[in-house]
Length: 197
Ligand SMILES: C[S@@+](CC[C@H](N)C(=O)[O-])C[C@H]1O[C@@H](n2cnc3c(N)ncnc32)[C@H](O)[C@@H]1O
Image (cartoon, rainbow, N blue to C red; front, side):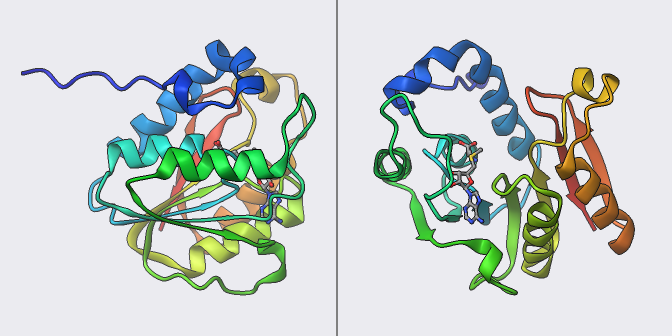
């Protein structure tokens, strides 16, 4: 029997985000596709969990994986009735039934994270050059052999063509060069790099 296509579910979203559903649907389905193409993913890490939308997509693909997420729930884009408590509660709701842990902490304060052998990292938090570089270093230091890092917000092709300066992309390119890593660009709403050793 053919495998049923994955669909990003409106029920996973908080009310004020629903206005973005059409734009975000293919973006989150892309996240699911990216992890689905990888084998041997037992530990998933994420820096920048927010309401757990990406996390849910990853776990829908790898339901037996252990998820560890970091978010300080202090600097998210709020407004429209969204509070940090609402975001954290929604993340917990979205990950219910899976093996997960969310650490409410600022990753910029750490040289190492308390996690090892992460097979798949999703980096989607501080979008400054130094912030992104810092989170990439944290991810690499705890990456399992054969693991991958998915970095969000490197810019989509339209933004790149317009010459929009993306601090995250610049940080990624320096990081990739420094450690002689491999990478693949993934076109999406925000543009992503899949990075591996
Ligand atoms: C774009 S949102 C993440 C969206 C989420 N990955 C998703 O796809 O549904 C960015 C998140 O990063 C978090 N963040 C930003 N800087 C951070 C830091 N220094 N430490 C921990 N979390 C941070 C914010 O609180 C926010 O929730």
